[in-house]
Each structure stands twice: as C-alpha cells, then as structure tokens.
Image 1 (cartoon, chains in turn purple, cyan):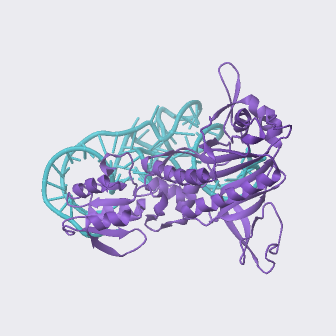
Image 2 (spheres, rainbow, N blue to C red; image 1 turned 180 degrees about the horizontal axis):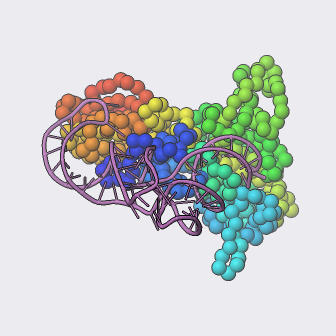
Image 3 (tube, chains in turn red, yellow; image 1 turned 90 degrees about the vertical axis):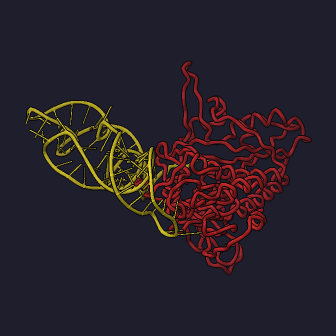
Length: 397
RNA sequence: CGGGGUGUAAUUCAUCGGUAGAAUGCUCGGUUCGGGACCGAGAUGUAGAGAGUUCAAUUCUCUCCACCCCGACCA
C-alpha cells in the first residue's frame, strides 16, 4: 500500500479529548476516527489490524471444529421477548420500523443462533454442534470509555455450542478454553483464566480471560504461585484455594474473552430438544476490537505503537528517501510481502517519526546512503543492518 | 443518570463587548532530504446550537447539545 494514496494521516498531536493511550495513539497514528462516544470508524490501517486479529481467532475456532457463519445485526423483537431479554437487558438497543414493529440490535446472538441451530439439530447424531461468527455488537452503555476498549458498538467473535449431556459439554468447554489461550498467545498477550459469576446468564461460574493493564475495568486477584485468578467484583477470597501456598495479588485487568455454561436456558426458551432432552449450551466470546485496544495499551513506547508481528497491519514499513524505493516496493510486493510504502516527499525525520508512531515491526529504508543494500531495523530495537533484498525477503517469510 | 472538565480552522491553542488570529497540517512554486528541515505565495471558520442583555455578543447571562474524566451501569 502506498502511503501517498491512502486515506490515513498521522497527527502531530493527539486530539485533546483522548486521554487513554489506545485512544490517543490509534487516532494519532491514523488507525481510527471517532464518530461519537464509543463508536469508531476503522481506517485502512485499523481495519487491517481487526482483520488480522479476526483471522487468528478464526483459525483457532476452526481448529476445534466450529463452523463460521454470519448472523444479522438487526433482530426481530419477538426473539428477545421469548427469552425475557427484551425487558430485562437494559443495554439492549431497541428500535421501531415505520410500521411500528419492534426490533433489537445485536447485543449478543443467543436469540438468533438458538432458533438457527434448532433447524439443524434433529437427532443425537447432530450433536455436538458448534457455530461461531465475527459480528458487530451493540450495547447501550451509560458511559463509553477508554477509546476502543468500551464502545457502544464493537466487533466480537461469539461462538455457541450444543451438547447432549454435561460431560460432553465439559469436554468442549475445556477445549474452547485451550483454544482461547492459543489465540491470546498468538496475539502476544498473556491472558489469565479468571473465575467470575455468569451474571444473569447463568448461575454457574464462568471464566473470563483477563489481560493485566491499568486501563482495564476488571478488578482481579491472581495467585503468584499458580495460575489461579478470580474476579473480585464477584467473589471474596483471601488465599489461593488452588495451590494453598500462593498469595493472591490484586490487579486491574481488561476482559478480552469469556466462556459461559448456559445450561438449558436457551434450549428451553426456543424448545430445542433432542429425544426429549434439552441440550446443554455454551457461549464463548472474544472482543476483537477491544483486544486491539488492549494490545496498544500493552505494546507502545514514547514514540508510538509497537505492534506484535502477528497482527501488524503490514509486515514492513518501507521508507523511501531521495525519491528512491519504488523498485524495492515492487519486488517486495511481488514476493507477497505486505508493505506500507512511504513514497511521499516528506522529510526524512518526519518519515521516521511516522514509522515509529505507526509501529509496524520492521522498518526498511532505501536511500542514497544505503546504495544497493536495504537498511533493516526492527521497531523494538536500535540495531540497524544493511541487507540484500533477498535476505530481507528471507527474514520476512 | 450524579459529579467534574472542555467546546474558536483538519489538529493543538490564542484573542476579545466593536464582526477572527498563530503554529502545525493542506495547495502551488522552489531549495532540501538520516529524526517532524527551509524560503515564498495561497486556500481554509455558522467561534457547538438556541434564546436573552446590548447600538453592537465568539466574548456577558440562561437553556440545550456534544466530547473527555470519576462514579453508577456494563444480561
């Protein structure tokens, strides 16, 4: 992608209303623009990051046998009335058509996926079944905050599964938890599996995937000896119940994912039955857009963002000086390397500052000084090397 | 929804009871080109909205709106 032909621009100063790091940097570096409180446009760079995160999530969900679909954002009110959500969920956005029919925006998709699954689950042979999609969610939060970390509209992967009995459910639940840990690991994050209440969703314990960060909203306690972690808004405990010798430490964290045992609540609401038995259902969410915000919170320095390689919008940021770089850009592109090419006539200093701000993991420079070599520098290092094009391509593949 | 803060150009800000300013950005021309370089020229505004006071309001008063922060909320 050519810098000069793309609709993003970096700002010398972040907008003054931005206080949270992810808000500041994502706007300043040209990844997002705010439309209103809690609602953002993702510009080409930001959109690419969302797609990268989505793709990793997609691969891991596919790997545990879930099938990807795409369900609507606009829902008929009756589905929500059937489960009681229409009256009990205060964050549900409701709207009315010209003909005075009531609709809801997708706060979540249990109300849509359960009737869908009912059509495909006709016998015990059809179980277990797992379906997921990546779709926008709408929640009428009283107060949006922290940039893209708590929006009223946000991108989420939500998966749903149905099982003949509790044992089978528990097996898949465990598998899903492991898949989640793989996802977060690939995103460069350390997510703690955290015990929490299931809200009004379920009376059972649910698990949240929490990433330690001051900009998060969750208050957790984690054990310094084992992997035990609990949401202290939900529970009151003072010693580690898992390993006994560990001390519980307080921390703030951001919830990037969660898994729930929904029991038979939705199966019953929509009369989804197999041989007279209501299947056990689970739901599993990952906040794609929030995770993007959390990654910026975790990976930045005084100069800008430092994207993990796995979700960087581009593999390399090619800086052309003295009008050079065109040939290298074409060759890299032909070798399937994702390149952001700064082909503008801005000063060298401004180009470098932009490269640091945008945070692509590898910066390449082609100038009079580099001759027939290419300068190679990683965003999180000061080491500068001069390499042949072949060596550059080899490193990037 | 309670409390606090802020609304003037794309961004950051100044100004002031007498009808709009700077820096950055943008456009054009030129010099540059290794850390936001320089010279010259130019375009850019319903001063958040409405009402009131006044000869005159961006400025004072009131109401509303928007955004940010704290809290509540976040099945």
